[in-house]
Image (cartoon, rainbow, N blue to C red; front, side, top):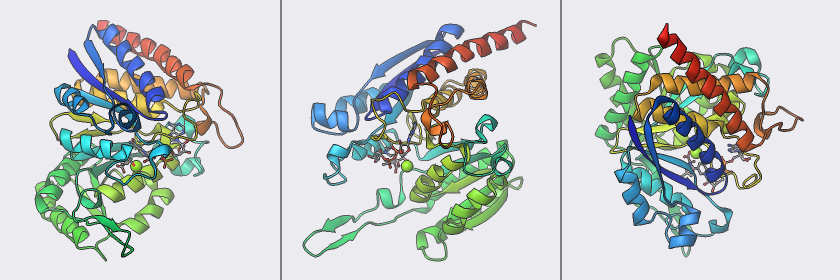
Length: 367
Ligand SMILES: NC(=O)c1ccc[n+]([C@@H]2O[C@H](COP(=O)([O-])OP(=O)(O)OC[C@H]3O[C@@H](n4cnc5c(N)ncnc54)[C@H](O)[C@@H]3O)[C@@H](O)[C@H]2O)c1
Ligand SMILES: CC(C)[C@H](C(=O)O)[C@@H](O)C(=O)O
Ligand SMILES: [Mg+2]
C-alpha cells in the first residue's frame, strides 16, 4: 500500500518524538513491502523563525496533498508575548481548520506494566480503555468575536456551536461506541451554558438511531473527579473542544504520563495525527522525552489512514512488551526513580520488538 505522509515535527520535543514515530512506520513499510513516503514541512515556532508565519502556505500545500499528516508539537516560550493569532499555536489551529477534521479521537489506554507509575492505585487504573471524542473545530477556540482591549481592560471569547457541528461529531461518537462497549458519556456544562444545552439536546435527539448505545450525560466539573475515581466506567467520552482538551490531558494520570497519549483527527479532507502532549520546553533537546505517545500515534496512522489494523496492533504490542521489560523514560520511571533509556533508545527498543511482532504475525498467517 502507498501512503504519502506529511511530517510536521514542529517545536521542542516535537522533532525528537516524531523521529521515533517515523522510525516505526518505516519498519512497517519495509516489512510489509509498503511504499510510505515522508515529506517534511514547517509549523509553529520553527516556521515563524524561518518564514515569519506559524503556518506557511508551503506547509498547507504539503499537508493537503498528503494521505495523512503526522504532527509533533508546537510551542516555544520565546513567542509567549505574541498575541494568540501570531503564536506557534495559531499554526496548529489553522492546519486543523485547513484539513477539516472535526472529531479528535484521543484514546486513554492503561498499559498494565505502568500501573505502578500512576498516582492512582493499580486497582483503579487496571484495564482502563477510554476513547475521548473531542470536537476540534468549534467552541471557544474559534468563536467570534474575540479580543483583548488593553485600554478598557476587557477581554472576551465566544463559545459558538451549531446543531450540525454537534450532530456530525455525535454520530462519530455513537458509531465508535457501537464498535466498542456500547456506552457514550456526553460531557458538558448544561447547568450554565446554552452551548452545552444544545449539545445535550442534540445527543438525546440522535440517541434513538443507536438503540444499542447507552447514553449518559455528565457535567464537566464532576466528570473531572469521576475520571480519577472510576475511570473503568467510561467507554466513549464525547465532548466539546475545550472540555476535551482538559479532560484528555487529565487522563494522562491514568496512563502514568501525558507522554503516553496518542490522537487522530478524522472527518476532514486529510486525517491529522498528533500526540496529545505539547512541546515540553522543560525537557526539550535532552533526549528525555517519552516517544511512546508519538509511536502510538503512528499506530493510529496505520489504523485510520492505512487500514493496516494488524500492523497497528503490532506496534501497540511492541510498546507493551518494551514497558513490561522495564524500559522507562523519566516521566514513567516512577516517583524518585530515573530514566533508564533515552528518547531514541526507547524508539529503538520498540522498533526491535515490532520486528519480532510482525514476524510472529506473519508466521501465524503461514499456518
Ligand atoms: N499539540 C500541540 O502541539 C500542543 C499540545 C499541548 C501544548 N502545546 C504547547 O506546548 C507548550 C508547552 O505546554 P505545557 O508545558 O503546558 O504542556 P506539555 O504537554 O508540553 O508539557 C506538560 C508537562 O508534561 C511533560 N511532558 C509532555 N510530554 C512529554 C513526553 N512526551 N515525555 C515526557 N514528558 C512529557 C512536560 O515535560 C511538562 O512537564 C506550550 O507552548 C503549549 O501551547 C502544544
Ligand atoms: C496547543 C493547543 C492549541 C492545543 C489545543 O488546545 O488543542 C493542545 O493543547 C492540544 O491538546 O492539542
Ligand atoms: Mg491540550
